[in-house]
Image (tube, rainbow, N blue to C red; front, side, top):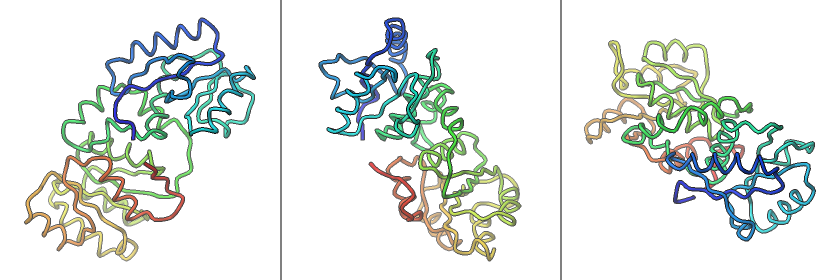
Length: 274
């Protein structure tokens, strides 16, 4: 996992005007959770991400050569090559906001850098200050998910954080802001995982909702992960008695969250490297 929030970017084959634009973009990124700096050709093989001109044979050959040493996330500009051969592809003209989104998505998925993914706690302010482009990029990217999850929490921030964490592992997410709306969904839909807060609006708390879930024949064996700010041993016991499979207390670090996914989503299609 990358230990800092600054990533080096190698530019290869781009036009001078494009290089200037990308350099300016990197300079403006300095105060974000993810920031970028241009590296020199001398250090190309150490760069975290490459951005290359797809019409420049030399640039493509250089990337292929570098890829023989290690996996390098790359964005290819104006390429006629199949998209599957590269991590991201952008047609000209380069749009700064879209390029920044692509960079954010690459370092998150390929370099396992998750500044927003402390669910609950102080990281919430980072998530909101990071700008909308990263979250928009996640939802704009078409994908085929193998798993589904239901997130039950009355906090919009927590729902978005959990949804983001799940989306990064190709888990399709449905959200509910109350126990009542969640039960309505559970009567008609199947889910592979259920994330459940303890404190919910309405008459039923998370413990009661968990017991109701486990009474449904189609969800009797569905893992229920309680995700709550209640940390006392008594609350953990109540969660266990209600039938929850795992009890997580906020804030939840990414490594802990990932371990839960590995535990319950064991099919090989789930990619949880790092």
